[in-house]
Every structure is written in structure tokens, then in C-alpha cells.
Image (cartoon, rainbow, N blue to C red; front, side, top):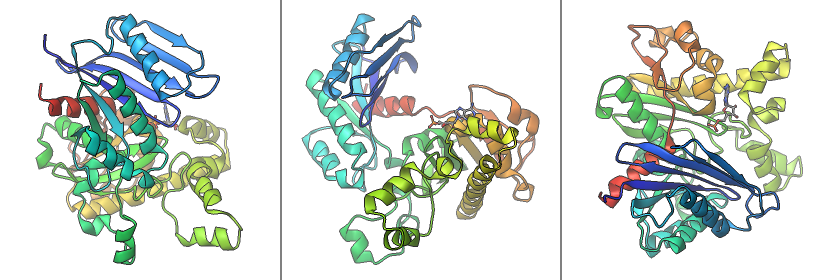
Length: 400
Ligand code: AMP
């Protein structure tokens, strides 16, 4: 029997998301989520995608080890346990690969040590990813485990885009540069956009707008990332659900000196109490649109600030690329919020960018064009699929 299945694990600080895929046909067999690990109210929700059956557990789950064991039990109940000979690899989403990891990597002790060394660059995420890897290794020591890095797709950025204009020695001493995140999504969506246009990725330039609760833009030239909006951390760039995105760094000094805030206070302010939630008290675009329809001025201003930043990045990346074949919207907001797509590109006909209102209003699950026929630049909605991309990359690497 050929092993063609890949289990994809996305381990967060208190959660584990997983999907089991069969790479023989790209189909999904199971999916689930363990939440609130380490709390009394832990919850595991498992769905077998073949039968459609869903099961939930609400007993306390103490740690990631226990979480993964519960996931393995759930998979086993449907005859797809971790001991299955059909399992070819486990693919792990790892947030920060620094400058070291430019591609997916089979995990050994040296790789684990390097992910550990990069913890200061992603202090919340990399430790959770490491715990997930170690737990999975303990359960199936013989199985290839593959790390797929959120930063890897962006390692092709030229130094002119990756470097901050600060003292070089200081920057190098502390590994300060722009790394970018959401790379798996940008890679998948830029390729899927080329496919939608019926062209090879090497033939097209694409601006990808990944607009979820976290949000980032990237400029992709001939399949390679040449610029992206997130930086040393995911704080830089677009206005997000709870993050500020770009601001004058002196705001931080001002808050410390004049506002008396600590480094941690400012960190929390900019990452958790800014962006849409800071501007209007809501970070869900659906709620913001409901409030705008009801005449709420704060929600309207938050929407305008969000869209203004987005337009600036579209313009900037248009200039970075010189020639643009497509703009692709993806993730929760990008795939669903027609108003954001329309507003972000309104008035840019002179740049060859336009959104057809009728096409934009159509809801759908697949990749689709929303620009008028014959537009110079295609505008597309391209649902992202990070799990499929991780599974593909892991499977390609283990050589089945
Ligand atoms: P993500 O991080 O990609 O899961 O995106 C989550 C965000 O997508 C939510 O916080 C919402 O702002 C947004 N979202 C999800 N569904 C919709 C929808 N139907 N319309 C507008 N925004 C949506």
C-alpha cells in the first residue's frame, strides 16, 4: 500500500488545529480543533469528512501532549489512527524560520535546535510549534515530520525590501530585518491566481492581499516574493483586526515617556487593542458592516482607515512590480467582504484596476475573477488553503 496521507498540524499556544489529507487526490479526510489546552474548559471538535460525522469532547486537556493523544484517538475511531501505514508524513506549520529556512524541511535534532534558536523572534508561536513537533515525534518516532515555515516564501525578498534603514551592525546583531508571515498562504494564492489566469506562475506578477484577522499584502514577481507588508513581526503593514499595522515608531517612545506605558503595555496596545477593534470596538468585518448600515460613524471611519491603508499598499506594490497581471483577495475578509474589495480598488481604473459590481457580489467557494471582461489587470477572489499547501510541500519532500 502506498502511503499517501499527510496529517497537518497547526499548534498554537493553547490550541491545535489539524487536517488529514490524502495526497493521492488532494481530498480531505478529517479536520478538527483542540481549544483552551491547559484550561478546565478544553474542547476538542473532530469532523470525519468522509462520513460527515462530528464529535465533541469537553473534558480538560492538560497540555499539547494530551491534546495530540486525543486527536490520535479521534482519528483512530474512524480507522485513520496515527499508526496507519497509509500515513506518509506529518506536516507542521512553523511560524518563524528566520533566514535559515527557505523551504520546507524534514525535522531532525539540528532543525529542532534551530527552530528553538529562533524563539526570540517569535516568542509566542515557535515554542508552541516545537511542542507540537516533539509530541508528534513521540507518538510516531519513525514517521517523517516536516516543518513548513510561514516566513519561507518571503526569503526571496531582495535586501532592498528586507532591510530596515537602521544601523547595520545593530540590525545584524539582533537579526532585525523584515521576514514577513502568512507565506504559505501567499505562495498558494499567487500560484492559484496564475492557474486561474491559465498561465504559469513564472509568467505573472501578482499582488496578494491576505485579509483575515491578521492581514498582509505581498508583491509576487514571476512566482517569487519581492516584498511583503509584515516585518520582523506580524505587527507591520496593513490595518488588522486587532493590530495597528504601520505607525511612526516614535509613537512608542511617546507612549513610554509621556504616557508612562511599559514595553509590555505598548506591545499589548499595538497587537491586541489596535486595528479595527481599537478604532471602533469590533474586529469582525461583518459586524462593522452591520454598524455602518445602521449609521455608526466610528465603524465607518474604521472601515475607511482600513481601506485607505490597503489602497496605499496596492499602489506601492504596483510600483514595486512595474507590471501587474492580477490582484488577488484572500482569507476571511478578502474572500467574503465584497465592500472591502470594491472600496480598495475604487477609482483605480487609470491603473487598469476595476471591480465588476455584479461579479463582486456573487458568493462562491472557488477561485473567481471579479474584474470586468477585458481588464488590463485581473482582479480575483482566491480562497486560501494553507493546510493543502503544507500537505503538498510535506508530501513532495518525503518523496512518495
Ligand atoms: P481569518 O483570519 O482568515 O479566519 O478571517 C477572519 C475574519 O474574516 C473575521 O474576523 C471577519 O472579520 C472576516 N469575515 C469572516 N467571514 C466574513 C463575512 N462573511 N463577511 C465579512 N467578513 C468576514
